[in-house]
Length: 223
Length: 80
Image (tube, rainbow over all chains, first blue to last red; front, side, top):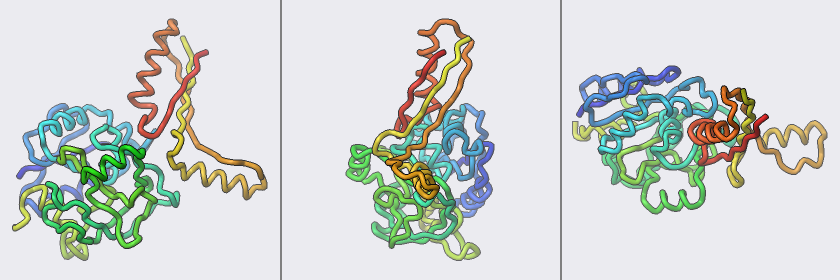
């Protein structure tokens, strides 16, 4: 399985993401710069975290209007898997590829710590390696991760199983509605999440709870 | 040239943690009687346009495409 990592000014988790994808799939991902209008033939496109365009206007707002996003939209429509982590999640929401919005954390503070995640839906291309209801550890580092959706949208995504991850055991760090930490699109090939699974994939990280997301998406669960 | 002011505000029902914090700070400064504070954004634009109708059309497109996130925000604008 081949993967690509998107690079934009201000994104700073791209190296961690490239390292995680390389270690888990055995192949280095291709990198795609924001001005590119075509994305190579890959199975998974990842938008990493950071502070694209300094979070000006709204987090992810300007990045979501860059040419590369049109190419990502086209790939997503073809069924290619797209994963957005942290700022990548914010970008996917601003680009209209996922439902809802991310607001300033309820505490108004930047949170950088480890939380617990419940795998709310294990029947997805990104979570096959886990069991439904499994609780995993995962780091978070963000200022705007407070998920919001209007009542109708919330009902739809909950009903469709589009809520893939929830903060568990009272560890919701940002005030997200329904403890939502990660959502996917109706088709199931685009996932956005605030926590950073790429930072918990090997013993040197203190655990590998996050590995399953990449292993599922890259189809290397048994490896 | 037309000058425009775009105002972007949060929709009703959208939690505004920053507005809440400002509300609390006003209270602690002794400004009692402030019911609710909602924070928004203001953009002042200069448009190379003389036709008001065209300017309004362009502003609407700018708001829909970039200046506001219509999932959570409303927008309005005035021309001068």
